[in-house]
Length: 365
Image (cartoon, rainbow, N blue to C red; front, side):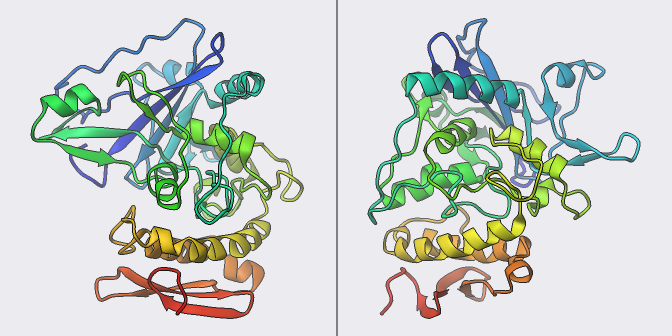
Protein backbone atom coordinates (compact mmCIF):
# COMPACT_ATOMS: atom_id res chain seq x y z
CA UNK A 1 0.00 0.00 0.00
CA UNK A 2 3.06 2.26 0.32
CA UNK A 3 3.72 1.96 -3.42
CA UNK A 4 1.40 4.27 -5.45
CA UNK A 5 1.42 1.78 -8.35
CA UNK A 6 0.25 -1.25 -6.38
CA UNK A 7 -2.33 0.20 -4.00
CA UNK A 8 -5.71 -1.53 -3.84
CA UNK A 9 -8.90 -0.09 -2.35
CA UNK A 10 -12.08 -1.80 -1.18
CA UNK A 11 -15.50 -0.22 -0.95
CA UNK A 12 -18.67 -1.64 0.59
CA UNK A 13 -22.14 -0.29 -0.11
CA UNK A 14 -24.77 -1.63 2.26
CA UNK A 15 -28.49 -1.85 1.57
CA UNK A 16 -30.82 -2.09 4.57
CA UNK A 17 -34.07 -3.43 3.08
CA UNK A 18 -36.26 -2.58 6.08
CA UNK A 19 -35.13 1.05 5.98
CA UNK A 20 -34.88 1.36 2.17
CA UNK A 21 -31.51 3.03 2.71
CA UNK A 22 -27.95 2.55 1.52
CA UNK A 23 -24.76 3.22 3.44
CA UNK A 24 -21.04 3.44 2.67
CA UNK A 25 -18.19 1.63 4.40
CA UNK A 26 -14.49 1.35 3.50
CA UNK A 27 -12.91 -1.93 4.63
CA UNK A 28 -9.25 -1.48 5.51
CA UNK A 29 -6.53 -2.84 3.22
CA UNK A 30 -3.00 -3.22 4.59
CA UNK A 31 0.26 -4.41 3.07
CA UNK A 32 0.85 -8.13 3.46
CA UNK A 33 3.23 -8.78 6.36
CA UNK A 34 2.54 -5.54 8.22
CA UNK A 35 0.60 -5.15 11.45
CA UNK A 36 -2.65 -3.24 11.78
CA UNK A 37 -1.76 0.23 13.02
CA UNK A 38 -5.36 1.09 13.97
CA UNK A 39 -8.15 -1.46 13.90
CA UNK A 40 -11.00 -0.45 11.61
CA UNK A 41 -14.37 0.80 12.81
CA UNK A 42 -16.89 -2.04 13.03
CA UNK A 43 -20.06 -1.02 11.14
CA UNK A 44 -23.43 -1.38 12.85
CA UNK A 45 -25.61 -3.27 10.37
CA UNK A 46 -28.56 -5.62 10.66
CA UNK A 47 -28.61 -9.32 9.77
CA UNK A 48 -30.91 -8.42 6.88
CA UNK A 49 -28.36 -6.10 5.26
CA UNK A 50 -27.25 -6.86 1.69
CA UNK A 51 -23.68 -5.80 0.91
CA UNK A 52 -21.78 -5.33 -2.32
CA UNK A 53 -17.99 -5.09 -2.29
CA UNK A 54 -16.10 -3.33 -5.05
CA UNK A 55 -12.34 -3.54 -5.52
CA UNK A 56 -10.24 -0.97 -7.37
CA UNK A 57 -6.49 -1.06 -7.84
CA UNK A 58 -3.82 1.36 -9.02
CA UNK A 59 -1.99 -1.66 -10.44
CA UNK A 60 -2.85 -2.99 -13.89
CA UNK A 61 -4.48 -6.04 -12.37
CA UNK A 62 -6.09 -7.05 -9.10
CA UNK A 63 -6.59 -10.71 -8.25
CA UNK A 64 -8.75 -11.90 -5.36
CA UNK A 65 -7.08 -14.77 -3.50
CA UNK A 66 -9.06 -17.21 -1.38
CA UNK A 67 -7.51 -18.26 1.92
CA UNK A 68 -10.11 -20.96 2.61
CA UNK A 69 -9.69 -23.40 -0.29
CA UNK A 70 -12.22 -21.74 -2.56
CA UNK A 71 -15.20 -21.37 -0.23
CA UNK A 72 -14.98 -17.66 0.69
CA UNK A 73 -14.90 -16.24 -2.83
CA UNK A 74 -17.51 -18.72 -4.02
CA UNK A 75 -19.90 -18.08 -1.13
CA UNK A 76 -19.34 -14.35 -1.41
CA UNK A 77 -20.24 -14.46 -5.12
CA UNK A 78 -16.96 -12.74 -5.95
CA UNK A 79 -16.09 -12.07 -9.58
CA UNK A 80 -12.59 -11.23 -10.76
CA UNK A 81 -13.22 -11.85 -14.47
CA UNK A 82 -14.26 -14.96 -16.44
CA UNK A 83 -12.82 -18.42 -16.86
CA UNK A 84 -11.58 -19.23 -20.36
CA UNK A 85 -11.34 -22.52 -22.23
CA UNK A 86 -7.82 -23.06 -20.91
CA UNK A 87 -7.81 -25.15 -17.69
CA UNK A 88 -7.98 -22.90 -14.63
CA UNK A 89 -7.24 -19.87 -16.80
CA UNK A 90 -8.86 -16.65 -15.61
CA UNK A 91 -9.30 -13.67 -17.89
CA UNK A 92 -9.41 -10.88 -15.27
CA UNK A 93 -11.11 -7.51 -15.71
CA UNK A 94 -7.90 -5.77 -14.71
CA UNK A 95 -8.11 -3.16 -11.95
CA UNK A 96 -11.68 -4.10 -11.00
CA UNK A 97 -13.46 -6.89 -9.09
CA UNK A 98 -16.61 -7.27 -7.01
CA UNK A 99 -18.56 -9.51 -4.63
CA UNK A 100 -22.34 -10.00 -4.34
CA UNK A 101 -23.24 -7.30 -6.88
CA UNK A 102 -26.17 -9.04 -8.56
CA UNK A 103 -28.11 -9.63 -5.33
CA UNK A 104 -27.33 -6.13 -4.04
CA UNK A 105 -28.45 -4.24 -7.14
CA UNK A 106 -31.56 -6.40 -7.58
CA UNK A 107 -32.83 -5.64 -4.08
CA UNK A 108 -31.58 -2.06 -3.88
CA UNK A 109 -33.14 -1.08 -7.22
CA UNK A 110 -36.50 -2.58 -6.24
CA UNK A 111 -36.50 -1.03 -2.77
CA UNK A 112 -35.18 2.39 -3.68
CA UNK A 113 -37.64 2.67 -6.56
CA UNK A 114 -40.45 2.40 -4.02
CA UNK A 115 -38.87 4.81 -1.55
CA UNK A 116 -37.91 7.51 -4.07
CA UNK A 117 -34.67 8.16 -2.16
CA UNK A 118 -32.50 8.61 -5.24
CA UNK A 119 -32.22 12.38 -5.82
CA UNK A 120 -32.90 14.11 -9.11
CA UNK A 121 -29.85 15.22 -11.06
CA UNK A 122 -30.34 18.95 -10.94
CA UNK A 123 -28.88 21.43 -13.44
CA UNK A 124 -25.23 22.22 -14.13
CA UNK A 125 -23.93 25.79 -14.54
CA UNK A 126 -24.41 25.48 -18.29
CA UNK A 127 -28.13 24.80 -17.82
CA UNK A 128 -27.93 21.13 -18.82
CA UNK A 129 -28.81 18.15 -16.60
CA UNK A 130 -25.98 17.11 -14.31
CA UNK A 131 -24.12 14.05 -15.62
CA UNK A 132 -24.00 10.58 -14.09
CA UNK A 133 -21.51 7.74 -14.35
CA UNK A 134 -23.47 6.56 -17.41
CA UNK A 135 -23.37 9.88 -19.23
CA UNK A 136 -21.40 10.09 -22.46
CA UNK A 137 -20.11 13.40 -21.07
CA UNK A 138 -18.18 11.44 -18.43
CA UNK A 139 -17.38 7.89 -19.60
CA UNK A 140 -14.04 6.73 -20.96
CA UNK A 141 -12.46 3.54 -22.33
CA UNK A 142 -13.41 1.55 -19.22
CA UNK A 143 -16.36 3.28 -17.64
CA UNK A 144 -17.62 2.62 -14.12
CA UNK A 145 -14.30 1.21 -12.95
CA UNK A 146 -12.62 1.41 -9.56
CA UNK A 147 -13.84 3.05 -6.35
CA UNK A 148 -14.16 6.27 -4.34
CA UNK A 149 -12.65 4.84 -1.14
CA UNK A 150 -9.61 6.64 0.29
CA UNK A 151 -7.15 5.67 3.01
CA UNK A 152 -4.62 7.51 5.17
CA UNK A 153 -1.00 6.46 4.77
CA UNK A 154 1.04 6.66 7.98
CA UNK A 155 4.61 5.78 7.14
CA UNK A 156 4.20 2.35 5.56
CA UNK A 157 0.83 1.61 7.18
CA UNK A 158 -2.73 2.39 6.15
CA UNK A 159 -5.69 3.35 8.33
CA UNK A 160 -9.27 4.25 7.51
CA UNK A 161 -9.87 7.82 6.38
CA UNK A 162 -11.97 8.94 9.36
CA UNK A 163 -12.22 12.23 11.24
CA UNK A 164 -10.76 10.53 14.32
CA UNK A 165 -7.73 9.22 12.42
CA UNK A 166 -7.18 12.50 10.57
CA UNK A 167 -7.05 14.29 13.93
CA UNK A 168 -4.92 11.68 15.68
CA UNK A 169 -2.15 11.23 13.09
CA UNK A 170 -0.16 14.39 12.40
CA UNK A 171 2.07 12.97 9.66
CA UNK A 172 -0.23 11.40 7.12
CA UNK A 173 -0.96 11.32 3.42
CA UNK A 174 -4.33 10.82 1.77
CA UNK A 175 -4.14 8.09 -0.87
CA UNK A 176 -6.77 7.56 -3.56
CA UNK A 177 -7.83 5.22 -6.34
CA UNK A 178 -8.11 7.54 -9.41
CA UNK A 179 -11.45 6.19 -10.62
CA UNK A 180 -14.20 7.35 -12.94
CA UNK A 181 -16.53 7.42 -9.94
CA UNK A 182 -14.16 9.69 -7.99
CA UNK A 183 -13.67 11.89 -11.07
CA UNK A 184 -17.42 12.43 -11.34
CA UNK A 185 -18.19 12.97 -7.65
CA UNK A 186 -15.19 15.02 -6.52
CA UNK A 187 -13.91 16.75 -9.66
CA UNK A 188 -16.52 17.18 -12.42
CA UNK A 189 -19.61 17.73 -10.24
CA UNK A 190 -18.11 20.49 -8.04
CA UNK A 191 -16.55 22.21 -11.07
CA UNK A 192 -19.79 22.48 -13.05
CA UNK A 193 -22.07 23.25 -10.10
CA UNK A 194 -23.61 19.84 -9.54
CA UNK A 195 -24.22 18.07 -6.25
CA UNK A 196 -22.84 14.51 -6.13
CA UNK A 197 -25.00 11.73 -4.73
CA UNK A 198 -23.61 10.89 -1.29
CA UNK A 199 -24.68 8.41 1.37
CA UNK A 200 -24.03 8.07 5.09
CA UNK A 201 -20.67 6.52 5.96
CA UNK A 202 -20.74 3.89 8.71
CA UNK A 203 -17.01 4.10 9.37
CA UNK A 204 -16.95 7.88 9.80
CA UNK A 205 -19.93 9.19 11.82
CA UNK A 206 -21.71 12.33 10.57
CA UNK A 207 -20.02 11.94 7.17
CA UNK A 208 -21.57 11.32 3.76
CA UNK A 209 -19.66 10.23 0.65
CA UNK A 210 -20.12 8.73 -2.78
CA UNK A 211 -19.57 5.09 -3.72
CA UNK A 212 -19.47 3.25 -7.02
CA UNK A 213 -22.73 1.49 -6.22
CA UNK A 214 -24.44 4.72 -5.17
CA UNK A 215 -23.37 6.49 -8.35
CA UNK A 216 -24.53 3.57 -10.47
CA UNK A 217 -27.91 3.47 -8.71
CA UNK A 218 -28.46 7.15 -9.41
CA UNK A 219 -27.42 6.60 -13.03
CA UNK A 220 -29.85 3.68 -13.30
CA UNK A 221 -32.80 5.80 -12.18
CA UNK A 222 -31.90 9.26 -13.48
CA UNK A 223 -29.65 9.14 -16.56
CA UNK A 224 -31.37 10.47 -19.69
CA UNK A 225 -30.98 8.69 -23.02
CA UNK A 226 -28.65 7.79 -24.55
CA UNK A 227 -27.36 5.77 -21.62
CA UNK A 228 -23.73 4.65 -21.70
CA UNK A 229 -23.46 0.93 -20.89
CA UNK A 230 -20.19 -1.00 -20.99
CA UNK A 231 -19.47 -2.04 -24.62
CA UNK A 232 -17.59 -5.11 -25.90
CA UNK A 233 -14.75 -2.80 -26.97
CA UNK A 234 -13.90 -2.00 -23.34
CA UNK A 235 -10.41 -3.50 -22.79
CA UNK A 236 -11.47 -4.77 -19.36
CA UNK A 237 -14.22 -6.91 -20.89
CA UNK A 238 -12.22 -8.42 -23.72
CA UNK A 239 -10.41 -11.76 -23.75
CA UNK A 240 -6.95 -11.57 -25.29
CA UNK A 241 -8.02 -8.44 -27.16
CA UNK A 242 -11.16 -10.03 -28.63
CA UNK A 243 -14.75 -8.92 -27.76
CA UNK A 244 -16.67 -11.13 -25.34
CA UNK A 245 -20.36 -10.68 -24.57
CA UNK A 246 -20.04 -13.05 -21.62
CA UNK A 247 -17.25 -11.05 -19.99
CA UNK A 248 -18.99 -7.76 -20.82
CA UNK A 249 -22.13 -9.00 -19.07
CA UNK A 250 -20.11 -10.14 -16.06
CA UNK A 251 -18.61 -6.67 -15.81
CA UNK A 252 -21.99 -5.00 -16.24
CA UNK A 253 -23.46 -7.07 -13.41
CA UNK A 254 -20.82 -5.64 -11.09
CA UNK A 255 -22.05 -2.11 -11.88
CA UNK A 256 -25.78 -2.86 -11.81
CA UNK A 257 -26.13 -2.53 -15.58
CA UNK A 258 -28.44 -4.48 -17.88
CA UNK A 259 -27.04 -7.66 -19.36
CA UNK A 260 -27.44 -8.17 -23.09
CA UNK A 261 -27.54 -11.06 -25.54
CA UNK A 262 -26.87 -8.88 -28.56
CA UNK A 263 -24.63 -6.09 -29.75
CA UNK A 264 -27.61 -3.96 -30.76
CA UNK A 265 -30.91 -3.04 -29.15
CA UNK A 266 -31.72 -0.81 -26.16
CA UNK A 267 -29.10 -2.46 -23.92
CA UNK A 268 -26.71 -3.49 -26.68
CA UNK A 269 -22.93 -3.57 -26.36
CA UNK A 270 -22.06 -2.32 -29.84
CA UNK A 271 -18.75 -0.48 -29.85
CA UNK A 272 -19.66 1.50 -32.96
CA UNK A 273 -22.83 2.89 -31.37
CA UNK A 274 -20.84 3.71 -28.24
CA UNK A 275 -18.28 5.68 -30.27
CA UNK A 276 -21.00 7.55 -32.20
CA UNK A 277 -22.64 8.72 -28.97
CA UNK A 278 -19.30 9.50 -27.36
CA UNK A 279 -18.19 11.63 -30.32
CA UNK A 280 -21.51 13.44 -30.53
CA UNK A 281 -21.97 14.23 -26.83
CA UNK A 282 -18.62 14.51 -25.03
CA UNK A 283 -16.70 17.10 -27.12
CA UNK A 284 -19.43 19.81 -27.02
CA UNK A 285 -19.85 19.20 -23.28
CA UNK A 286 -16.12 19.42 -22.54
CA UNK A 287 -15.85 22.61 -24.64
CA UNK A 288 -19.00 24.16 -23.17
CA UNK A 289 -17.97 23.46 -19.58
CA UNK A 290 -14.38 24.56 -20.12
CA UNK A 291 -14.97 27.98 -18.59
CA UNK A 292 -15.65 26.14 -15.31
CA UNK A 293 -13.38 23.08 -15.46
CA UNK A 294 -10.34 25.15 -16.49
CA UNK A 295 -10.41 26.71 -13.01
CA UNK A 296 -10.16 23.34 -11.25
CA UNK A 297 -7.32 20.90 -10.68
CA UNK A 298 -7.11 17.69 -12.73
CA UNK A 299 -7.52 14.18 -11.37
CA UNK A 300 -4.17 13.29 -12.93
CA UNK A 301 -1.71 16.23 -13.24
CA UNK A 302 0.53 14.10 -15.47
CA UNK A 303 -2.16 14.10 -18.19
CA UNK A 304 -3.54 17.66 -18.09
CA UNK A 305 -2.64 20.89 -16.28
CA UNK A 306 -6.30 21.64 -15.48
CA UNK A 307 -9.48 19.59 -15.24
CA UNK A 308 -10.43 20.95 -18.69
CA UNK A 309 -7.25 19.80 -20.46
CA UNK A 310 -7.27 16.54 -18.50
CA UNK A 311 -10.78 15.70 -19.73
CA UNK A 312 -9.81 16.52 -23.31
CA UNK A 313 -6.63 14.45 -23.21
CA UNK A 314 -8.54 11.60 -21.52
CA UNK A 315 -11.14 11.71 -24.33
CA UNK A 316 -8.38 11.54 -26.93
CA UNK A 317 -6.87 8.45 -25.29
CA UNK A 318 -10.32 6.86 -25.03
CA UNK A 319 -11.01 7.44 -28.72
CA UNK A 320 -7.82 5.57 -29.57
CA UNK A 321 -8.23 2.68 -27.12
CA UNK A 322 -11.85 1.99 -28.14
CA UNK A 323 -10.85 2.03 -31.81
CA UNK A 324 -13.42 4.71 -32.59
CA UNK A 325 -11.58 6.12 -35.61
CA UNK A 326 -11.62 2.72 -37.32
CA UNK A 327 -15.21 2.00 -36.28
CA UNK A 328 -16.83 5.24 -37.46
CA UNK A 329 -14.10 6.47 -39.82
CA UNK A 330 -13.55 9.77 -38.03
CA UNK A 331 -10.47 11.08 -36.25
CA UNK A 332 -10.80 12.24 -32.66
CA UNK A 333 -12.90 15.44 -32.40
CA UNK A 334 -10.53 16.58 -29.66
CA UNK A 335 -6.80 16.97 -30.11
CA UNK A 336 -4.66 17.81 -27.09
CA UNK A 337 -1.58 20.02 -27.29
CA UNK A 338 1.18 18.93 -24.91
CA UNK A 339 4.16 20.61 -23.26
CA UNK A 340 7.65 19.11 -23.12
CA UNK A 341 6.64 16.99 -20.12
CA UNK A 342 3.74 15.32 -21.95
CA UNK A 343 1.08 17.30 -20.06
CA UNK A 344 -1.88 18.66 -22.05
CA UNK A 345 -1.99 22.47 -21.87
CA UNK A 346 -4.64 23.31 -24.50
CA UNK A 347 -7.21 21.62 -26.72
CA UNK A 348 -8.43 21.80 -30.30
CA UNK A 349 -12.02 20.81 -31.13
CA UNK A 350 -13.79 19.84 -34.35
CA UNK A 351 -17.56 19.89 -33.79
CA UNK A 352 -20.06 19.62 -36.65
CA UNK A 353 -17.39 20.72 -39.10
CA UNK A 354 -16.43 23.79 -37.08
CA UNK A 355 -12.96 24.16 -35.54
CA UNK A 356 -12.30 25.68 -32.12
CA UNK A 357 -8.99 26.30 -30.45
CA UNK A 358 -6.36 25.94 -29.40
CA UNK A 359 -8.11 26.90 -26.17
CA UNK A 360 -7.10 26.62 -22.51
CA UNK A 361 -10.54 27.29 -21.08
CA UNK A 362 -13.18 26.27 -23.63
CA UNK A 363 -13.79 29.89 -24.59
CA UNK A 364 -13.09 30.45 -28.29
CA UNK A 365 -11.41 33.78 -28.93
